[in-house]
Image (cartoon, rainbow, N blue to C red; front, side):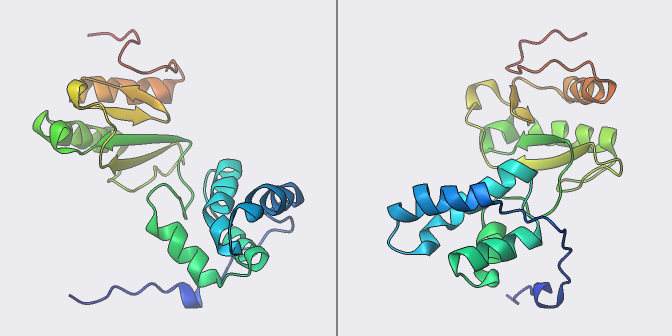
Length: 190
């Protein structure tokens, strides 16, 4: 199999005047995380989490700042951030829709749920709508096999989904009538 190369070596990093890795974040890393590890490299995951929690994703400038602070090559920061599915190296939509693709959900028609969401949003898995409102992803397992198929809307779990109910949830988010809480207990028309 051939290696797929990334063109990150020739990328231009968009920079803003203020740093992503703030003085408060640096102090927290220095005082709370670095003492726990034998090397500075050990604080890389917490640093990435801090940035993502603050920004919703991890911009290239932030990766450079983390690398400089922890004395790690920027390529290692990028490799780490792009390796783990939980990190976002591209801006994501305001609402993250995550459909489970575990074997239990697949048996219970999760593919049909995903296809219906793709149709409603007019995007493919891994894409963000042009208005920046929604990003659609698939995850390996959401740990709710007994209520498959399931999906997350941001952090709200929705169980026993049908394609039409998934479409209804998306439309409610669009219309601003979605109520946070999930678990399939929300009121919906059928």
